[in-house]
Amino acid sequence: MQVAPIVPQRKTGEVFIKSLPFAQQRLILSQEIIPAVRGEYYSYSSIFTQEQPLYALMKCKSNKARPISAIADLGSEVNALFQFNEDGQKILSIKTADTLGLLGGVNSEIVFDDIWIAPTNLTSKQFMELWVDKKEKELVSVCRKVINAHHTLVKLHKGLVVAMMISGGKYGMFLVSKVTPSLIKIEACHILL
Image (tube, rainbow, N blue to C red; front, side):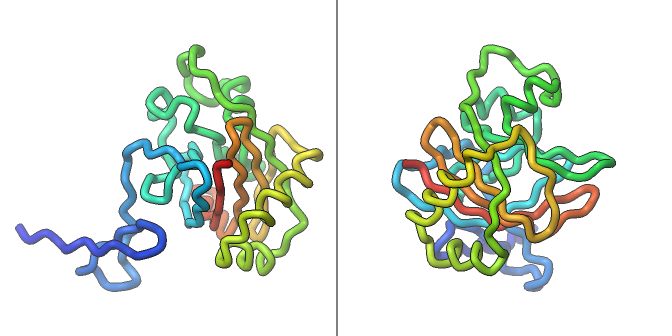
């Protein structure tokens, strides 16, 4: 059996299987729990599904999309849940998801961080400039401004930019780049201060 060589990509720690045609290359991320490092800025893409709806803002090498069964291992590293249902896709803070019983009876001893979520007025273009140029101060500033109007959940649609602020010191933002009944793709960035 021949194993395809793995080629690391420079800036993000992402790994691709080289032998697959470009259109079929799959991103391979670590399933390890690799917490964010204070002061490091992360920008990445992530895909969430009904099977992997948990969102954990960790290092780029670590998969951000996780199954609900991983919640005990993730502990306070898990930050939000993407919900898929008939009336549209949403993102909820992990505490809200727990309160609503969406985490499958998780051990109540886990102490989740407080998370504030709010839609922003940024356009896709404005977000992508912030994302590509790694504008840390602007990211934190936007998060702090919109969080006053925070929600327990935000209904998602393509092109929406959402800000997140976590009591543990993480500031994050994502652009919804694709939404289907079974998939949500985001372009995201975050920093731990």
